[in-house]
Image (cartoon, rainbow, N blue to C red; front, side):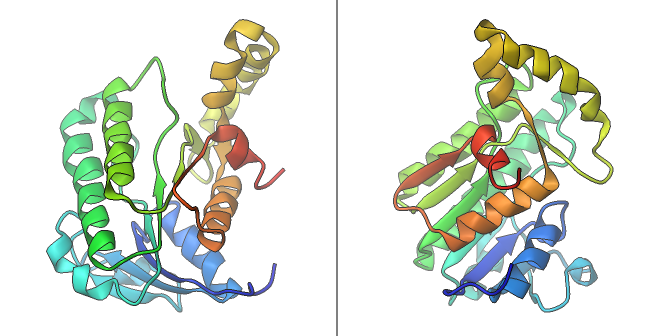
Length: 221
């Protein structure tokens, strides 16, 4: 894919993470400019060509003045490898970083806010889902135009073990009573997520747009 007809100026939090580094590497060749917020000492983890912004993703005051002139804000900060033992971290990191991001985006007149949430409702990881749902509500209440992506589990390097569950998902989709849940909580791979995020950046929402697992999967067959 080549350069797009309209380049975006993108501010990304979580740019050194599993999805962030891959998204930056996908956006730059397409003609977009990218600024990435990182903690001091992690600058070297960013792809070449990305502008480095050093700050604390939990404290908007450390980076709010560096968001402009970006028009798109991508919020990717969150607790890695979520599990029920990380309840306090979900509140501090996932909610705290989203709150700081929304504040910075609002103060800079960001045109489009992109947020990676989680599939919902779900029978497990309920506190994690609750925090992400609260983040979604905060984004809606902000009045920002936003795209919210809701994957359940993203497959990729170091994250392949859930492929063992594919037969169960296949069976679940065959049964009418479980079909909707199996699709909503389905697996997506990292290529599909990056393609969906790239598409979201290049095609801003008007209001709030939700992309569930089936829509994320459509980004890459």
